[in-house]
Amino acid sequence: MTTQDPQHPSPAADLTTGNPELDAYTAAMAGDQAPLLGHVVLYSVFPGTVTPDDLTAWFTELDLDPDFLPPPLKSDAAYERVTGRDGVRVTYPLDDPTATGRDGRRRRRQPDELGRSALLMVRPVSRDSGRIVRHVVREVRDERKVKLRYDTRLAAVVFRRDTSEPGAGQMTIKPDDKAIAALPEAEQTTVREMLAEIQASYITNCTYFTGDRLRSLVRAYVEHLGAIKLRPTGGVYFVHHRHDATLAALRELVRRFGHGSLLARVPLPDQDEQREMVIAAFTTNARDELETLAKDLAAARRAGAKQAEVEKLFERYRALQASTAEHSELLSVTLDDTNDALELVKLQLTNLLTTADHEDDD
Image 1 (tube, rainbow, N blue to C red):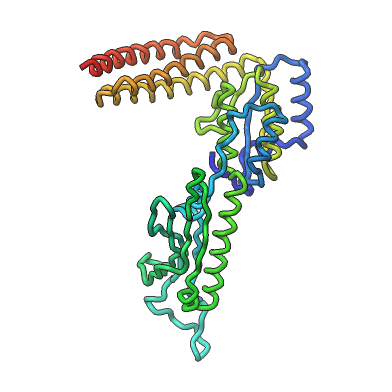
Image 2: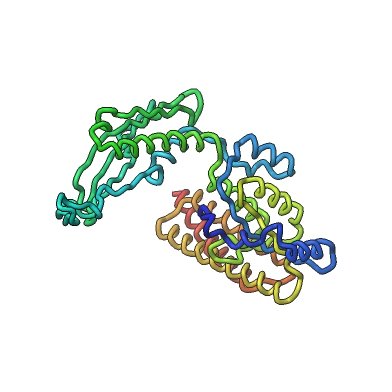
């Protein structure tokens, strides 16, 4: 799931804890006033100031599985994120289209002045076991995207590795004061503001988890609960009621992430219509996964896959088989179509494994 725009939040953002009708409905369902099938789960995660220590303490307090804690923050990863392709960039116009000549009339711009803009970005220079060197460069282009000027070095952004610990090190920024001074005053300010942004963003990424990292955590935990995607692109799931306590803990965890972060649980009554919706969603997801697995099997067979590669395919098959058995039991339904497809894939796997065994013997 991508970073949510506060101006365009996900559907979960509409299901706030201040909604009295939803709260009353949730309380009624939780109070055994109606049979509960499970919950429709939606979540939105916005960037906040969550440190590794915060997250570890919250997992302990809420009795969540520490296996889902993200890996430790690393300085080299922060450097790559800030100075990489999706890192800090600044674009700004160079021309004033309202400029006038000495006679007070609007001056017609010359062809080489049309739509000129400058782009400040960070480009790689060198990398070795001790350090990574990148330069802040300035490109000037016109509206036809024709490069007019290229300044190769306004500053050096260097990461020096600390070999005592994987991923450790320190970033330093060294401005080229002479090159910056050659620019117009307004541009000098823009360049120095960009360098300050790189430094601040690096410190932030070394200190706090990004929204993407936290979002991945929530997605992985929800999917671990046997969640069924109700929307092909994800973000909306069904989770069986046996995981109610864990969902409640996750809801509290997400609430602490940052302003606007929310995990919403919409109770789903155990009625025919709702049950059919969930079964249809699971069957569709399983069919798609089985089709992908079958294609991967065919590709592996054409490529003459070795036994180790086939074993990985078997692991995917076994996971699908276990998921089908689990949801068949939880939903009290026989998933015949999915089971038939599983048998076909199993036959393909067995044939492929036999072929791999013979090739390894040879």
